[in-house]
Image (cartoon, rainbow, N blue to C red):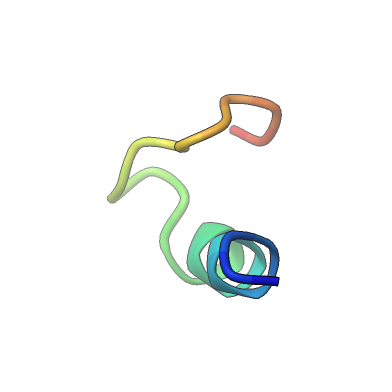
Length: 26
């Protein structure tokens, strides 16, 4: 949940702005 919710909200908020931590999502 630590990286799940954070990454999920982060990737949809700014995918191109910040580099993906896992790399599975652009």
